[in-house]
Length: 97
Length: 456
Image 1 (spheres, chains in turn red, yellow):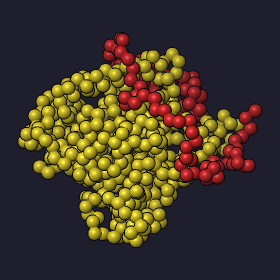
Image 2 (cartoon, one colour; image 1 turned 90 degrees about the vertical axis):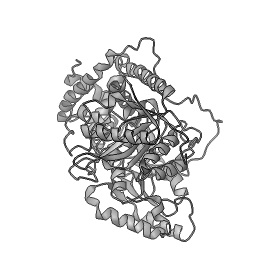
Image 3 (cartoon, chains in turn brown, cyan; image 1 turned 180 degrees about the vertical axis):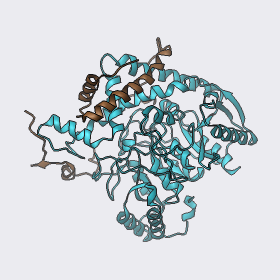
Image 4 (cartoon, chains in turn orange, brown; image 1 turned 120 degrees about the vertical axis):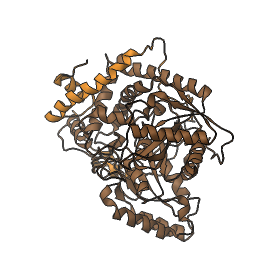
């Protein structure tokens, strides 16, 4: 049975870019352990030599000409209005460096 | 319940006003997040003036709130998108509007469609149409209840692992999850790209068939869409070979559900179809496969909600704090559980044991289905192991909640068409649904078969 420590949960939260509150992290230790424990049953299946299925259509690569397509009728200004903060035709975020 | 035919001869304004009035009358069920009244009435008047025509002229509907629409917000039932105004509409919505249909509002769901009860909504749970103390099922719970309560004759839903079929079953309506790739997903909030499908919830099988005929088809904006193969089957020719899946009729399934499924099979026999018990041994492993593969895809698809380009943004000093706090505040606990599970099964050291193992097991499941479809035309099993459960009953136990999807995830993993049709009620009067599953692209045949038993 896989055990989830608080350190494991902190690591997964970091991989997931989620800043957890302390009580959320505690709940997740229990829930993730419970859920991943449920996955263990798959080890009963013999999958030796079986190819994985990542998608279920027979569609392979769908190519198109390298041409500019329509913009779905959406103006740049409309998209910038959706941004929480924008300035001078750019989306603004806190300082990175 | 209302059907499409009920609207013939009615003005669009009257149809829309009646739908909006009914929505307000039953708002305690919390089926809808938002009404898009102004735009709906404008469109109704345009239909009445003859400016918009089509097969669905003036007929009101609701879209699950993970479909981008004009006229108001598209929230995905989350804090993350609670004020999001879509700059474009989903292809499915555009196709319905091109036929004159009118979207009157947005239906509640589990946030980002993660859930099986519509309790994981930032706007509160939707209540079952037949008993307000019970869940609506999910994640298209609002869509199912809106149809069951007579607000609209049909609703758009999305089904990734049962999210149309299971709430359809819990509320006594018809729910169609088509063959993977039948309907464009452009403009629908992505969950798990390898199993996400778009379908409808209706009161009759005929209406579902008419709507799928309108919705099906290739879209250059969704590269997984198939060339339109959907042609409604007016009348079935000859008898079909029906297989009932043994593993779905065990003691773990409610007795009433098993009995009503059996009664449905008896009706199929009376119609001249052959019914044989068959085995799908991997059924019980499907749920574990699903809850590895789908969270993996969720963790990737939901990476886009970072507080930068749109949606909620948390007050922050640094960029990494902005990402972390935005995502903690904007997501519901179930969203975070699934994202973190996905990160786990994809992380180095665990990838082979979980993600790769599940994708290999999925191949075996698909092979078992293919073997069965060599001998049978249709497979039947209950849509859910129980009728609607009590609100709050499973919210503290994720695995118990996931078990509500046990019957619906196999068809999703294999990309097969599956529909849920009403098949009576349990002793307490709660609806039971029976699920018909067919080989890829057999959607119209499944609906035609369901039609024969609907009339019986």
